Each structure stands twice: as structure tokens, then as C-alpha cells.
Image (cartoon, rainbow, N blue to C red; front, side):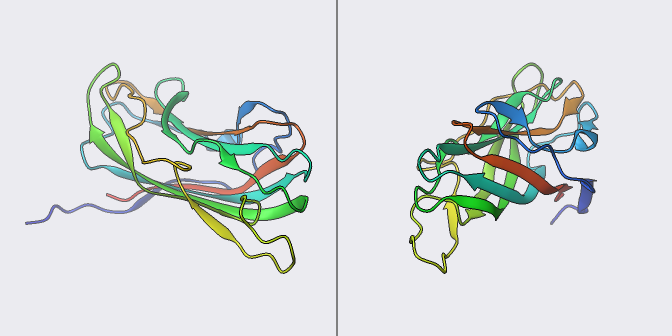
Length: 190
């Protein structure tokens, strides 16, 4: 027999996140959308879906890599999901092209200290700027299965007995591009 649950949108952005241009890790969601979940919010099987979209630019000569981290924990800095470094396209320079990130995380264990962990049941990034695209227009779009070029793993553990801040970080390895989140939504699927 099944259990009765409901789908709930926890947060939905109505403004853009910051435009990130530095070769550094930084929060990419709007400051107002960094919410805190109450203590003991998670249970084994609880699933969160993170849906983000926005624009990215990168230079042909030094595109570098893109990386997304979903973070939780008391400070919102414990990496519970890491996309790993996604290779950006080297031909041609991309300017303000669209991208879509879709990640579902299933709670695998709960507890204090670092015992609460998550596993990605779905994680994809769709963008024109992923290495492997044909150089001639019209360019198609690639969808990268994440984490990039490796098997999925359980993320770092966090403390479920304390309140947990949600945040998403973006890292680019070179300061020759930019990324802006236009839409950000987190849904509790059960």
C-alpha cells in the first residue's frame, strides 16, 4: 500500500540571480531565494527537484569549464550534489545562450552530524555551450548527464537535526565568460 504525499513548490524565483563573471565559486541564485528548511525536514525517500534556467557566455579561446553544486546544511555550503566540471564548447564563442539544469535528489539516509545524504535520481544540464557541438549553425543542443563523465555518487552528508539552508553554487574556471540564473525553483516531490 502506498503512502499519501503531496507535491509542494518550496521556492520560486521572480528575479534574476547575480551575473557571475569571476573564475571562482559563487552562489548563483537570487539572494531572496536562499530559503531555510526546518530541522528534521528530511526522511528516507524524500525527493527534492531543483530546476534552474538562465544564460551563459564563454570565449572561444579559453572557455574553461562550468560546474554546479547544490548545497544544504546549516550554512548552506555542504555540497550534497556536484555536477563536476563540464567542458564548455571551444568553437565558436557563445554569447548569452540558454541553458537548463534539472536535478532530482533522493534522501538516502537521515541523522545528525553528517549522516543525512542524497543521491541524484536525475541530473541533466542542457545547453548549446557544451563541448561536442557542431561548429556550424544552426547549432544543436546537447544534454549532459551529470555528474559529468562519471557515475553518480552520494553527496556529502549534512545534519538533519538542524535547520538546513538551500543554495546553488556555480564555478567557472576562467574569467572569460558569464552565467546568470533567470529562473530557479525547488519542489518537494513527496
